[in-house]
Image (cartoon, rainbow, N blue to C red):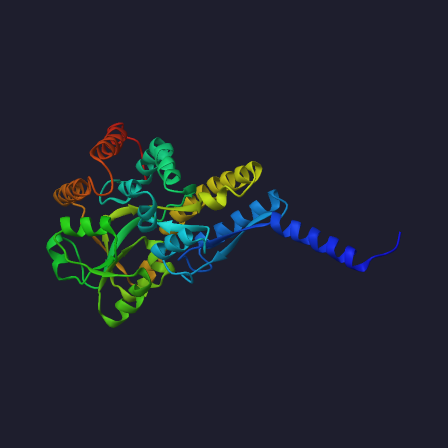
Length: 337
């Protein structure tokens, strides 16, 4: 048989094209900076998926807000410019509004209550994501978010003079501050650091680890206890991209997503405890507002804020069931952190 260079080259090109077609690169974005547990865990997830799929599926990670923030991620996923993202409650609400009940103020008192409610409602919330075109790869808890200020806040009256930041377009934060009778300053999360530096705001809310990771702790002096709410997050992938994977690849991505996001939640909780030490070393003082009367007042504020979101983010039935799940669990005297 005569050697035909053109035919051979065409065959090699076809084989190369077929190989490339089998490779699935999932473009993933997060506001988390490099070096944080959030990014470290995501890279471990990527490595595990690549190993189990023989390199046929992997994540391309865009970190540190290089692709914007939550609402930018959702918009880009809808356009197909991104396929997956690590989002906080703001992003989750853009996909499945009902899950924002998990971020509502003064709902949870400890991580045991959070874990109980997530286990009880996971299937229902997962369906809500899929109904709106996304697959939940795993919950990635940010942690209990405290209010950080440049003046001590030990009572609700003290918050009146704080120029408090609110994540722009966040209905849960808006409801919380309205119940607290505070008029916050809405800004992008990316603008918080600059705004603290210039004095546009002198109050913000974040988990202890989040405040340290984003360097906000260098621009505040006080942290109020108790926390405002528990901040949830998750990793989601568009169903459009997920459906391009083989059933075997889908199983690998979903299983590893759940495994590594559970590990991230564990690490986040450890990081939040360690961050308290960092805050102390940076002279951020904790101001307690935890007397029985104050806690009762916060509980009522939380109840009003949650009720105000009925018909906007979730229905009365879901609110009743979630609040009952927390109350029943708390009545059993389960320990928590």
